[in-house]
Image (cartoon, rainbow, N blue to C red; front, side, top):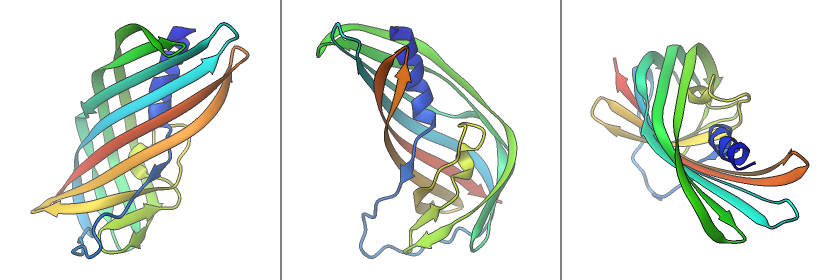
Length: 198
C-alpha cells in the first residue's frame, strides 16, 4: 500500500489545477507576442496522500525538484492564442518520500522519477489578466501529454531581455478510493517555464 500511495503522489503532481496570484499592484506590461523556443521547465513539487485503513492514519509526503531535459519545441503567441509545435521534454530526477503512521515518521525513501513528455503540437486560447498575467481557460499547453486532462490555469509573466518566464503556482486537493480506502491527495507545485525569443 505504501508503494501505491507513493506512486499516487507522483501522478498527482502532474494532474493539478493551476492558479495565478497577483503580487504587484502596478506591473509593467509584458510583451509576449511572437515566436519562442522552449528552453525548460523548472519545478518544485510536493504531494501528500493520507488515508485511514482502520489500523491508523497513514500519510506519505513526496517531494521533488527538477529542471526538464531534452527540451524541444517552438511556441507561437499572438493576442489570444498560444500554440506549440514539436514540443517535448523529459524529467530525470529522484523524489523523496516520508511515510508517517499516526503522525510519527516511520520511514524515508528515495525513488526514481522519470517522465518523457511525448512530442506534441497543441493550441490553447488565453486571456490577458492585467499587465503581467495570463489565464488559459481550456488548459495549459505545457501540460499536454503530461496529464490525462487539461484544466484551466494561469501564469505570472516576466521578461529578461529575449527570455520570457511563465511562473505557475498550482494547488489541488482531491480524493480517490484505492483498495477500499478513501485517499485524500493534496498536491502543490511551483513551476517556471522558460522561453527564448526567435
